[in-house]
Length: 323
Image (cartoon, rainbow, N blue to C red; front, side):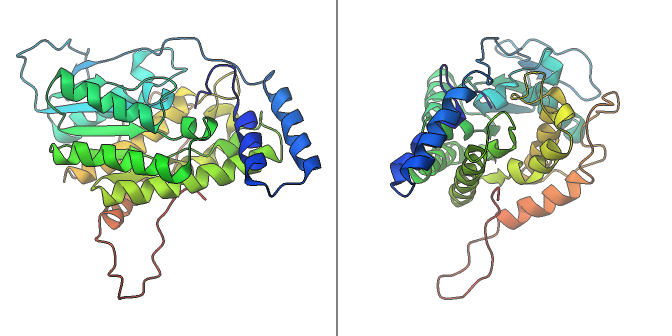
Protein backbone atom coordinates (compact mmCIF):
# COMPACT_ATOMS: atom_id res chain seq x y z
CA UNK A 1 0.00 0.00 0.00
CA UNK A 2 2.86 2.38 -0.80
CA UNK A 3 2.14 5.98 -1.72
CA UNK A 4 4.00 7.74 -4.52
CA UNK A 5 7.05 9.77 -3.51
CA UNK A 6 6.17 13.08 -1.84
CA UNK A 7 2.49 12.24 -2.04
CA UNK A 8 0.01 10.95 0.47
CA UNK A 9 -3.41 9.46 0.36
CA UNK A 10 -4.57 12.42 2.39
CA UNK A 11 -3.42 14.89 -0.22
CA UNK A 12 -4.99 12.86 -3.00
CA UNK A 13 -8.24 12.57 -1.11
CA UNK A 14 -8.30 16.31 -0.49
CA UNK A 15 -7.87 16.95 -4.18
CA UNK A 16 -10.57 14.45 -5.03
CA UNK A 17 -13.08 16.00 -2.68
CA UNK A 18 -12.23 19.53 -3.75
CA UNK A 19 -12.62 18.56 -7.41
CA UNK A 20 -16.23 17.47 -6.89
CA UNK A 21 -17.32 21.02 -6.21
CA UNK A 22 -19.65 19.80 -3.44
CA UNK A 23 -17.52 20.67 -0.44
CA UNK A 24 -17.72 23.92 1.49
CA UNK A 25 -14.61 26.09 1.42
CA UNK A 26 -14.01 25.49 5.13
CA UNK A 27 -14.13 21.74 4.67
CA UNK A 28 -11.73 21.99 1.76
CA UNK A 29 -9.30 24.02 3.85
CA UNK A 30 -9.52 21.45 6.63
CA UNK A 31 -8.66 18.66 4.21
CA UNK A 32 -5.67 20.54 2.85
CA UNK A 33 -4.36 21.18 6.37
CA UNK A 34 -4.78 17.49 7.25
CA UNK A 35 -3.02 16.52 4.04
CA UNK A 36 -0.04 18.67 4.93
CA UNK A 37 0.18 17.13 8.39
CA UNK A 38 -0.13 13.63 7.01
CA UNK A 39 3.05 14.13 5.01
CA UNK A 40 5.01 14.12 8.25
CA UNK A 41 3.63 10.80 9.52
CA UNK A 42 3.35 8.63 6.40
CA UNK A 43 6.79 7.33 5.41
CA UNK A 44 8.26 7.15 1.95
CA UNK A 45 9.26 3.76 0.58
CA UNK A 46 12.88 3.23 -0.33
CA UNK A 47 13.67 -0.44 0.24
CA UNK A 48 13.68 -3.02 -2.56
CA UNK A 49 11.30 -5.90 -1.74
CA UNK A 50 12.91 -9.35 -1.51
CA UNK A 51 12.52 -11.59 -4.54
CA UNK A 52 11.87 -15.31 -4.51
CA UNK A 53 11.41 -16.22 -8.18
CA UNK A 54 12.20 -19.78 -9.13
CA UNK A 55 10.78 -23.29 -8.97
CA UNK A 56 8.83 -24.54 -5.95
CA UNK A 57 8.08 -28.21 -5.32
CA UNK A 58 5.63 -29.99 -3.01
CA UNK A 59 6.74 -30.41 0.58
CA UNK A 60 8.78 -27.24 0.83
CA UNK A 61 12.51 -27.13 0.49
CA UNK A 62 14.77 -24.54 -1.07
CA UNK A 63 13.65 -22.65 -4.14
CA UNK A 64 15.39 -23.80 -7.32
CA UNK A 65 16.63 -21.18 -9.73
CA UNK A 66 14.84 -21.53 -13.05
CA UNK A 67 16.89 -21.88 -16.21
CA UNK A 68 15.65 -22.11 -19.76
CA UNK A 69 14.58 -25.63 -20.64
CA UNK A 70 13.88 -26.74 -17.06
CA UNK A 71 10.57 -28.65 -16.81
CA UNK A 72 7.73 -27.22 -14.73
CA UNK A 73 4.06 -28.15 -14.45
CA UNK A 74 2.62 -24.67 -14.02
CA UNK A 75 4.00 -21.15 -14.51
CA UNK A 76 2.62 -18.55 -12.06
CA UNK A 77 3.17 -14.81 -12.58
CA UNK A 78 2.54 -12.07 -10.05
CA UNK A 79 1.49 -8.64 -11.34
CA UNK A 80 0.60 -5.44 -9.52
CA UNK A 81 1.89 -2.86 -7.07
CA UNK A 82 3.84 -2.84 -3.81
CA UNK A 83 1.40 -5.21 -2.12
CA UNK A 84 2.05 -7.76 -4.86
CA UNK A 85 5.80 -7.39 -4.33
CA UNK A 86 5.44 -7.84 -0.57
CA UNK A 87 6.92 -4.44 0.18
CA UNK A 88 7.97 -4.30 3.82
CA UNK A 89 8.83 -7.99 4.12
CA UNK A 90 12.35 -8.81 5.28
CA UNK A 91 12.52 -12.30 3.77
CA UNK A 92 11.44 -13.72 0.42
CA UNK A 93 9.59 -16.43 2.32
CA UNK A 94 7.17 -13.76 3.59
CA UNK A 95 6.13 -12.21 0.28
CA UNK A 96 2.71 -13.20 -1.09
CA UNK A 97 4.02 -14.56 -4.40
CA UNK A 98 6.28 -17.06 -2.68
CA UNK A 99 3.54 -18.07 -0.24
CA UNK A 100 1.11 -18.63 -3.11
CA UNK A 101 3.68 -20.60 -5.14
CA UNK A 102 4.57 -22.83 -2.19
CA UNK A 103 0.92 -23.32 -1.32
CA UNK A 104 0.01 -24.13 -4.92
CA UNK A 105 2.80 -26.69 -5.11
CA UNK A 106 1.53 -28.38 -1.94
CA UNK A 107 -2.13 -28.25 -3.02
CA UNK A 108 -1.53 -29.59 -6.54
CA UNK A 109 1.56 -31.77 -6.04
CA UNK A 110 3.14 -29.99 -9.02
CA UNK A 111 6.33 -28.11 -9.78
CA UNK A 112 5.47 -24.41 -9.82
CA UNK A 113 7.57 -21.74 -11.49
CA UNK A 114 7.14 -18.29 -9.92
CA UNK A 115 7.87 -15.09 -11.88
CA UNK A 116 7.24 -11.69 -10.32
CA UNK A 117 6.46 -8.76 -12.63
CA UNK A 118 4.90 -6.48 -10.01
CA UNK A 119 6.49 -3.08 -9.43
CA UNK A 120 6.26 -0.83 -6.38
CA UNK A 121 4.04 2.17 -7.15
CA UNK A 122 2.23 0.62 -10.12
CA UNK A 123 -1.29 1.68 -11.12
CA UNK A 124 -3.73 0.00 -13.51
CA UNK A 125 -1.71 1.63 -16.31
CA UNK A 126 1.45 0.10 -14.88
CA UNK A 127 -0.07 -3.38 -14.74
CA UNK A 128 -0.93 -3.08 -18.42
CA UNK A 129 2.72 -2.24 -19.05
CA UNK A 130 3.85 -5.23 -17.01
CA UNK A 131 1.75 -7.50 -19.22
CA UNK A 132 3.10 -5.79 -22.35
CA UNK A 133 6.64 -6.55 -21.19
CA UNK A 134 5.70 -10.12 -20.38
CA UNK A 135 4.40 -10.77 -23.91
CA UNK A 136 7.63 -9.34 -25.37
CA UNK A 137 9.85 -11.42 -23.08
CA UNK A 138 8.18 -14.78 -23.56
CA UNK A 139 5.00 -16.85 -23.53
CA UNK A 140 2.17 -16.04 -21.11
CA UNK A 141 1.89 -17.87 -17.79
CA UNK A 142 -0.57 -20.61 -16.95
CA UNK A 143 -1.86 -18.54 -14.04
CA UNK A 144 -1.64 -14.89 -13.05
CA UNK A 145 -2.30 -13.23 -9.69
CA UNK A 146 -2.67 -9.45 -9.42
CA UNK A 147 -2.94 -7.05 -6.48
CA UNK A 148 -3.74 -3.52 -7.62
CA UNK A 149 -5.74 -0.41 -6.87
CA UNK A 150 -4.29 1.69 -4.05
CA UNK A 151 -2.05 3.76 -6.30
CA UNK A 152 -4.92 4.51 -8.68
CA UNK A 153 -6.58 6.19 -5.70
CA UNK A 154 -3.52 8.17 -4.63
CA UNK A 155 -2.82 9.21 -8.23
CA UNK A 156 -6.42 10.46 -8.53
CA UNK A 157 -7.04 8.19 -11.53
CA UNK A 158 -10.70 7.90 -12.40
CA UNK A 159 -12.61 4.96 -10.92
CA UNK A 160 -14.21 3.83 -14.17
CA UNK A 161 -11.11 4.25 -16.39
CA UNK A 162 -8.96 2.40 -13.83
CA UNK A 163 -11.38 -0.52 -13.69
CA UNK A 164 -11.71 -0.55 -17.48
CA UNK A 165 -7.92 -0.71 -17.93
CA UNK A 166 -7.73 -3.59 -15.47
CA UNK A 167 -10.49 -5.44 -17.30
CA UNK A 168 -8.65 -5.09 -20.62
CA UNK A 169 -5.47 -6.44 -19.04
CA UNK A 170 -7.32 -9.45 -17.65
CA UNK A 171 -8.91 -10.04 -21.06
CA UNK A 172 -5.48 -10.14 -22.72
CA UNK A 173 -4.24 -12.76 -20.26
CA UNK A 174 -7.41 -14.83 -20.46
CA UNK A 175 -7.30 -14.75 -24.27
CA UNK A 176 -3.75 -16.09 -24.03
CA UNK A 177 -5.01 -18.99 -21.93
CA UNK A 178 -4.03 -17.86 -18.43
CA UNK A 179 -6.20 -18.24 -15.36
CA UNK A 180 -6.39 -14.83 -13.68
CA UNK A 181 -7.11 -13.94 -10.04
CA UNK A 182 -7.18 -10.30 -8.92
CA UNK A 183 -7.02 -8.98 -5.38
CA UNK A 184 -9.07 -5.81 -5.64
CA UNK A 185 -8.25 -2.45 -4.04
CA UNK A 186 -7.54 -2.62 -0.30
CA UNK A 187 -9.41 -0.41 2.17
CA UNK A 188 -7.08 2.53 2.76
CA UNK A 189 -9.57 3.80 5.31
CA UNK A 190 -8.06 1.46 7.92
CA UNK A 191 -4.85 3.52 8.04
CA UNK A 192 -5.17 5.49 11.27
CA UNK A 193 -2.22 7.73 10.34
CA UNK A 194 -4.68 9.42 7.98
CA UNK A 195 -6.96 11.72 10.02
CA UNK A 196 -10.70 12.07 9.74
CA UNK A 197 -12.56 13.08 7.65
CA UNK A 198 -9.97 12.13 5.05
CA UNK A 199 -9.96 8.53 6.26
CA UNK A 200 -13.68 8.18 5.58
CA UNK A 201 -13.23 9.64 2.12
CA UNK A 202 -10.39 7.19 1.48
CA UNK A 203 -12.66 4.31 2.50
CA UNK A 204 -15.43 5.51 0.19
CA UNK A 205 -13.18 5.90 -2.84
CA UNK A 206 -11.37 2.60 -2.37
CA UNK A 207 -14.73 0.87 -1.92
CA UNK A 208 -15.99 2.31 -5.19
CA UNK A 209 -12.85 1.24 -7.03
CA UNK A 210 -12.94 -2.28 -5.59
CA UNK A 211 -16.55 -2.74 -6.71
CA UNK A 212 -15.75 -1.44 -10.19
CA UNK A 213 -12.67 -3.67 -10.40
CA UNK A 214 -14.67 -6.73 -9.39
CA UNK A 215 -17.19 -6.14 -12.15
CA UNK A 216 -14.51 -5.54 -14.78
CA UNK A 217 -12.47 -8.59 -13.78
CA UNK A 218 -15.52 -10.81 -13.68
CA UNK A 219 -16.68 -9.60 -17.10
CA UNK A 220 -13.22 -10.33 -18.51
CA UNK A 221 -13.32 -13.93 -17.27
CA UNK A 222 -11.12 -13.49 -14.21
CA UNK A 223 -11.80 -14.10 -10.54
CA UNK A 224 -11.87 -11.02 -8.26
CA UNK A 225 -11.03 -11.41 -4.58
CA UNK A 226 -12.33 -8.62 -2.26
CA UNK A 227 -9.27 -8.20 -0.05
CA UNK A 228 -10.78 -5.16 1.67
CA UNK A 229 -13.88 -7.08 2.73
CA UNK A 230 -11.79 -10.00 3.91
CA UNK A 231 -8.92 -8.22 5.64
CA UNK A 232 -10.15 -4.80 6.82
CA UNK A 233 -11.85 -6.25 9.93
CA UNK A 234 -8.51 -7.75 10.99
CA UNK A 235 -6.68 -4.48 10.32
CA UNK A 236 -9.15 -2.71 12.60
CA UNK A 237 -9.21 -5.39 15.29
CA UNK A 238 -5.47 -6.14 15.51
CA UNK A 239 -3.55 -3.27 13.92
CA UNK A 240 -0.48 -4.20 15.96
CA UNK A 241 -0.31 -7.47 14.00
CA UNK A 242 -1.53 -6.35 10.61
CA UNK A 243 0.58 -3.23 10.16
CA UNK A 244 4.34 -3.08 9.98
CA UNK A 245 6.29 -0.90 12.40
CA UNK A 246 5.63 2.29 10.42
CA UNK A 247 1.88 1.92 10.92
CA UNK A 248 1.22 2.16 7.20
CA UNK A 249 2.60 -0.77 5.22
CA UNK A 250 1.18 -4.30 5.76
CA UNK A 251 3.05 -6.70 8.01
CA UNK A 252 4.17 -10.20 6.99
CA UNK A 253 1.15 -11.51 8.91
CA UNK A 254 -1.18 -9.40 6.76
CA UNK A 255 0.54 -10.56 3.58
CA UNK A 256 0.13 -14.17 4.71
CA UNK A 257 -3.62 -13.72 5.14
CA UNK A 258 -3.93 -12.07 1.73
CA UNK A 259 -1.90 -14.86 0.13
CA UNK A 260 -4.14 -17.51 1.70
CA UNK A 261 -7.27 -15.88 0.25
CA UNK A 262 -5.72 -15.48 -3.19
CA UNK A 263 -4.43 -19.06 -3.15
CA UNK A 264 -7.87 -20.49 -2.44
CA UNK A 265 -9.41 -18.46 -5.26
CA UNK A 266 -6.61 -19.54 -7.60
CA UNK A 267 -7.06 -23.22 -6.75
CA UNK A 268 -10.79 -22.88 -7.33
CA UNK A 269 -10.22 -21.20 -10.70
CA UNK A 270 -7.84 -24.03 -11.66
CA UNK A 271 -10.39 -26.65 -10.61
CA UNK A 272 -8.11 -27.84 -7.83
CA UNK A 273 -9.68 -29.10 -4.61
CA UNK A 274 -8.32 -27.24 -1.60
CA UNK A 275 -6.91 -29.24 1.28
CA UNK A 276 -6.40 -27.90 4.78
CA UNK A 277 -4.26 -26.12 5.79
CA UNK A 278 -4.28 -23.75 2.84
CA UNK A 279 -0.82 -22.49 3.73
CA UNK A 280 1.64 -23.94 6.21
CA UNK A 281 1.64 -21.02 8.64
CA UNK A 282 1.85 -23.09 11.80
CA UNK A 283 5.18 -21.53 12.70
CA UNK A 284 3.78 -18.03 12.43
CA UNK A 285 2.19 -17.43 15.83
CA UNK A 286 1.61 -13.78 14.94
CA UNK A 287 -0.70 -14.55 12.03
CA UNK A 288 -4.38 -13.87 12.85
CA UNK A 289 -6.97 -16.48 11.99
CA UNK A 290 -9.75 -15.58 9.57
CA UNK A 291 -11.73 -18.71 10.29
CA UNK A 292 -12.31 -20.95 7.27
CA UNK A 293 -11.01 -19.02 4.26
CA UNK A 294 -10.95 -22.04 1.97
CA UNK A 295 -14.66 -22.68 2.27
CA UNK A 296 -15.65 -19.02 2.09
CA UNK A 297 -13.43 -18.11 -0.86
CA UNK A 298 -14.24 -21.25 -2.80
CA UNK A 299 -17.94 -20.46 -2.68
CA UNK A 300 -17.28 -16.79 -3.38
CA UNK A 301 -15.16 -17.52 -6.43
CA UNK A 302 -17.80 -19.83 -7.85
CA UNK A 303 -20.45 -17.17 -7.32
CA UNK A 304 -18.36 -14.59 -9.17
CA UNK A 305 -17.89 -16.90 -12.14
CA UNK A 306 -21.63 -17.30 -12.66
CA UNK A 307 -22.95 -15.67 -15.85
CA UNK A 308 -24.43 -12.24 -15.36
CA UNK A 309 -28.23 -12.29 -15.07
CA UNK A 310 -30.20 -11.49 -18.18
CA UNK A 311 -31.19 -7.85 -18.58
CA UNK A 312 -34.79 -8.97 -18.94
CA UNK A 313 -34.83 -10.72 -15.60
CA UNK A 314 -34.65 -8.77 -12.34
CA UNK A 315 -31.89 -9.73 -9.96
CA UNK A 316 -31.06 -8.81 -6.39
CA UNK A 317 -27.43 -9.88 -6.77
CA UNK A 318 -24.89 -7.16 -6.02
CA UNK A 319 -21.18 -7.58 -6.74
CA UNK A 320 -19.11 -7.77 -3.59
CA UNK A 321 -16.59 -4.98 -3.33
CA UNK A 322 -15.04 -3.44 -0.27
CA UNK A 323 -17.82 -1.54 1.45
